[in-house]
Image (tube, rainbow, N blue to C red; front, top):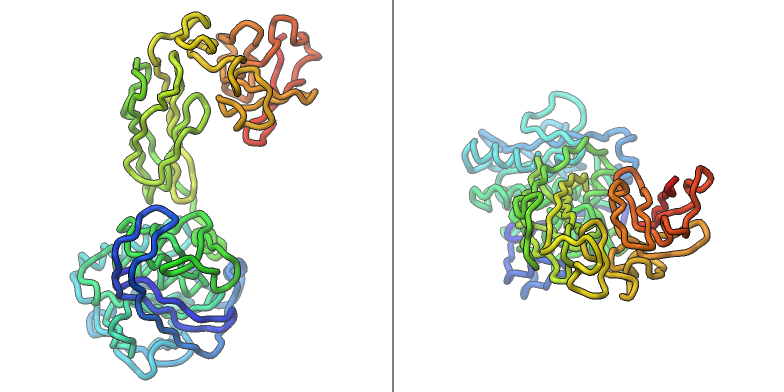
Length: 469
């Protein structure tokens, strides 16, 4: 990260050192994972310090000294005096393991409008968690002080340092972190990125080899970074084992365990192309509009109940698979926020001619289900062929009954019962059904005693099917 991402820390769990941000730039690495390594490595530095009270993340909220308040201090108007010693943000003046002598951090160099944008960005970054971001010093109680001002030389750090924080394998009460805002110019995203990384170091987060995450050491990726709710390698310019054990870290989960979460607002999802009921041609485009009050994490496209693609970033645009058969199809787009809260929208379209029987389908191996052409039993993975799991089926759905028989199934509307001959549309779950072999032509029992004998397996979940009466 240019002028912002922390340097490697040579640490042992339980010991405390100083995590230091880099200022070295390298050529752009590719934005997707795994990430390419830039050509050059920045300078590294660390400082060992005496042990402080440290609490493991998952019990931090239950111990003395814990606080969910992050006080962002811009050191206006005359600078901040910091004295050396064990970290104590509540002292006057605050004490920190970073400076070697009593020091004054120069004030935030930019306008009040830029400052407010920085505060809003940090608040947005931490919004999934039960964390309070304020730029007014608390009058009592414990808090983390994030100094967002000055230059590294103010606290005897090298000129190529963008930020510094105490670090250990857990939560440090009343820690003081430094984000040297005056080295960036009025670049809100760069300052926000550094603040997010430096504050999080003080509750035990390592660097993460993921250029979308604030804990990254990489120069590319989105300008505004959010804590990624997925495990990934630790590391700076290459993947490595994590400082506190293990080969991966989920920064989102680490912070969630420490502070707890907020009640997320689901994203707003819409499909702009095609429209519900449209007739389309092969390979038609699908465009979704997804917004969230914090950020969108990913978007999934499902066709006829099967996930066909997942996009991790805007724009949310797909082309329908050329293998998609003619007839009616249901398109569903699901958006997820940073807490993986889903919201979905579904439409129905018609590709080419809507079928009423197998003879209407262009492929001789297809059968007609609810107006759409799907692979039949003469095709591997087609409707009614045997299967062991969902991936064996063209539909992505493998059904099982109480006798242990497994067949590939297709979604259907029980009210329409539009399954081909030899199959019946048995209700599955609350909103739909599946075409099951046998059906109404003697393969299924009828009457009250037959209800619930079938099970439908999708993704390992068994759902009772109700036979027709």
